[in-house]
Amino acid sequence: MSKRRDTYYLLSLGCAKNTVDSQSMEVLLNGAGLHNTTAPDRAEVLIVNTCGFIAAAREESVKALRDLAAHKRPGQLLIAAGCLSQRNGHDLARQVPGLDGVIGTRRWMDIVDLVHRLRARNLPQPLYHLPDEARTVGTDERGVSRVAVQGASAYLKIADGCRRPCAFCAIPAIKGTAVSRPTERVVAEAQIAPSRTSTDPTMRPGASGSSSPTHTVRPPRTRRSPDPSTTCVGHPAARNLARRFPTSL
Image (tube, rainbow, N blue to C red; front, side, top):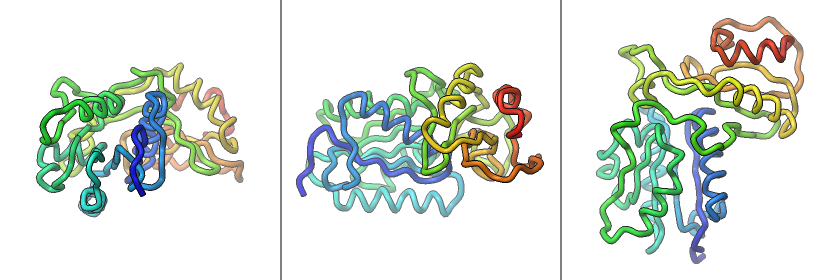
């Protein structure tokens, strides 16, 4: 198959938080006039939203990038986004020959800008979008809904990063210190999310042990007392949601 200009293929790896970021990037790309395709060989832009938390996830991300690079055709652009990009930075291009662009977790919302820069470049060297001044994940800068729908569930991001510098955890290095989204935006999106899927808001972290919670909208189920190890009731946005959905937490 021949590639088509203004098309993109996006592979999302890792946790639910990555899924939210991936679908938010899709909204921005669609808004810029690009069209999604599920066939990599038909896409002009190839994007892998990587996971970089544990060794197995890093290996999976590098393999996915190498597989796409091995079959890349002239004129196609391969971009590594997400956690592994933020964690490995400039070293990722050495691991994946043929990589064109690298964009980290903290400025994922600049994905369209990076595509434009790659199209306009005159040299084949990879372009990196890992600005030093980006100490935290940007929040609500482009007005994109931070909800990802998957079947009967939807994930709503309420925060990113972590302020606890545990020696065993890479989250602060990847995402920066904790930053919460505006409460009014979280609440508004939580109220809209049920119209996009089956309804029953519950609060859970995006991944086991994560410090960056997501709000999960799930189908109705039997009520039971929340497990304090999996319910983010201490987060300010969670407390606001609890007041609005008192039977869910």
